[in-house]
Length: 114
Image (cartoon, rainbow, N blue to C red; front, side, top):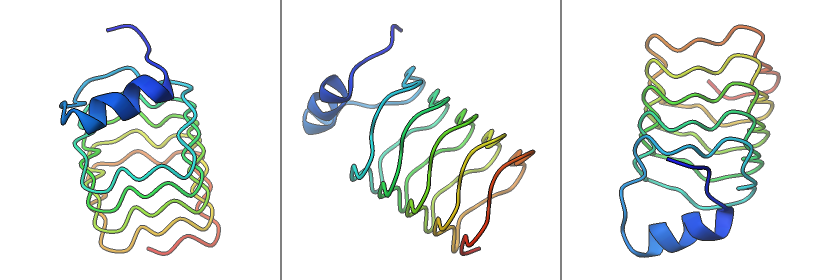
């Protein structure tokens, strides 16, 4: 699927669409509320998720390579087998998150709650 804009994503969320497997690379989603949303296998490479609410979201198998997640709320999120290589998770809340098999090579976890 082709890349979509943040406005198209918001419309999809309002319509209750499943986001599994979408290409959301380099999208600006800062401060968006994606609590409990299914983002399984979504490509979020380089995405701006500054202060985003991803609590209880399903990010299993997602590609978050180089994503900006500073201050993001990932409490109880499923990040199993996700790629967080070079992601910026400074001051992110990862309490209760499932990190089984998650790749974090070069990720910035400074000040993150684990």
